[in-house]
Amino acid sequence: MREVWCEVLRLPDVGDREDLFDLGGHSITMSQIPARLLDRLGVDVPLDAYFVAATLVELAAVVDGLQSAQE
Image (cartoon, rainbow, N blue to C red; front, side, top):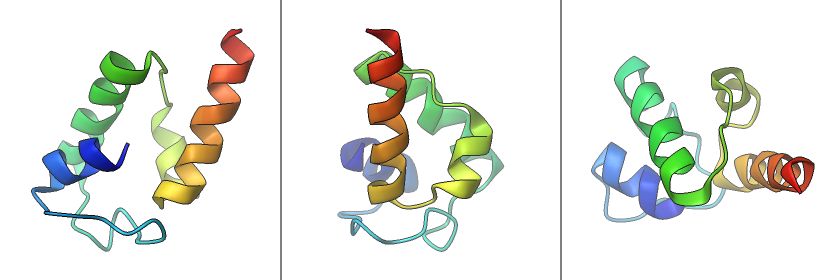
């Protein structure tokens, strides 16, 4: 996920607890990040998840839950 955020936000690195929107996330990035995560991780993260889980740590927990639900 960190790699996806760095690519989309065009940043060299992103801290685990940095807020997506504080880093420059906006409507365009919100269309790119979920599509890339679906492609790479096979998980469809709903858009509303990014508003309640706006850090990598928080979003990782959401992704883990979604992956567990798929099994």
